[in-house]
Image 1 (cartoon, helix red, strand yellow):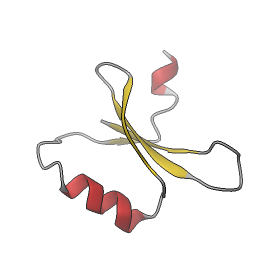
Image 2: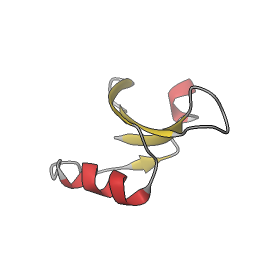
Image 3: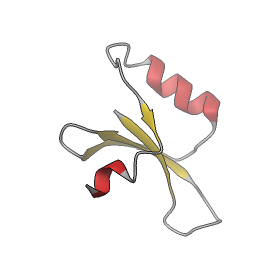
Image 4: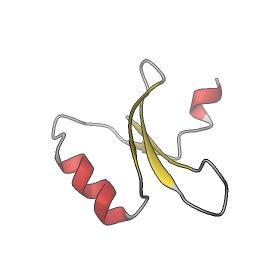
Length: 61
């Protein structure tokens, strides 16, 4: 799974985008990028074993 900050309009509101790195498809979009909220979301999916932060460069392969 990849996690990256995402903004529809830079410098205003940043969200968190969760991406399946095997399919390069989005899994979910949180309307925040606060660490507490991201941690809360991750705890609901205990089967996740690998997390890559800032994966936008990996998706451009």
